[in-house]
Amino acid sequence: MQPIRTLENTLFQLADPEHYLFTNLDLAAIMPGLNNSALNALLGRAHENGIIQRICRGLYLNPRTDYPAGLVLYHAAARLRANEFNYLSLESVLSDAGVISQIPMNWITLMSSGRNYIYDCGIFGNIEFIHTKKNMESIPSQLQYDPRIRLWRASVKQAIKDMRFTRRSTDLVDWEVADEFV
Image (cartoon, rainbow, N blue to C red; front, top):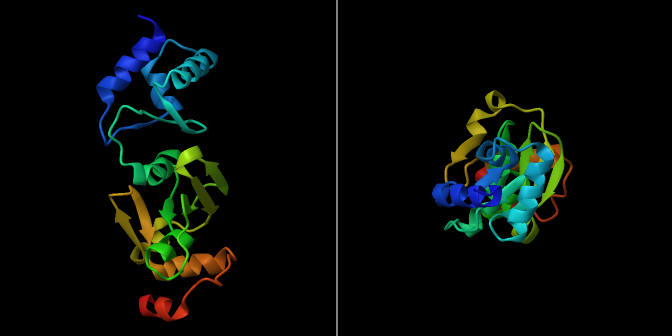
């Protein structure tokens, strides 16, 4: 069978709402006989034929699944930095809590033990990782795991601390609302 059909059939068998994002390493495991350049060529053809959809560099979506469209950015963030300590914070948490008036559209902000980087995820939006030296043990009471987004989420108190630490503008913060959480 042609490699593109093998990839398509395997992705069809794996398709479900829980498993719809695949990294290059995941796809390489499906096609173990291909070297990197052959795999990249195959993924390019699969993308052109609509078999996979490129989210960002190194991450693909299986478009045949019934994936949760509003959660793709969060799930992508969890997959992209799976080996790092990450938590949703900054404007994303403050907006969700109503502490800042503006809602960041298609943009999520996370603190990460990895380096600073903004992933452009095309039609889905952007994922911004901000480096922190904090670890899970240093702020356990300020984090809560959110299984819906598959990420740790900072408390409002921690998100405000992170805003100050990273020297991000706090001009939009409604301090009366923020004081209720602190």
